[in-house]
Amino acid sequence: MKIKKGDTVKIISGKDNGKEGKVLQVFPKKNLVLVEGVNIAKKHQKPQGQTMQGGVIDKSMPINISNVALIVNKKSGRVNYKFDKNGNKFRVLAQTGDEV
Image (cartoon, rainbow, N blue to C red):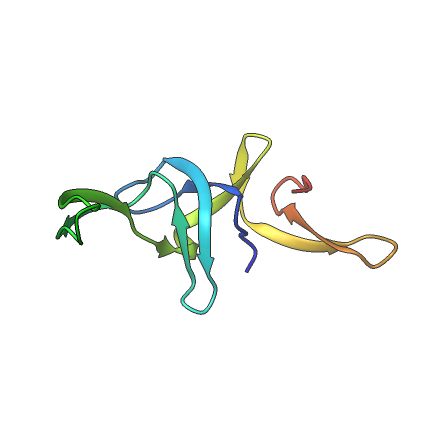
């Protein structure tokens, strides 16, 4: 996966199109990412014991990785890999060549 935890991404399609957020979690087997403040769903939660309060809570839901673009230096786009002279692999923005 070319998007990693902690990256800043922009949503490029769906109901949250244009929003930006930080990747909280990546699910590589399902091609999903969890982005903070994006794709919020209402969950009706029952109180569990005496400490947890019940009610309707907002919960971030994962979205498909094809619907996000990585942001580097205020520009967003696809991600490619490149190798330096020592053979180390690093990520670059495909359109500009900026290193992540």
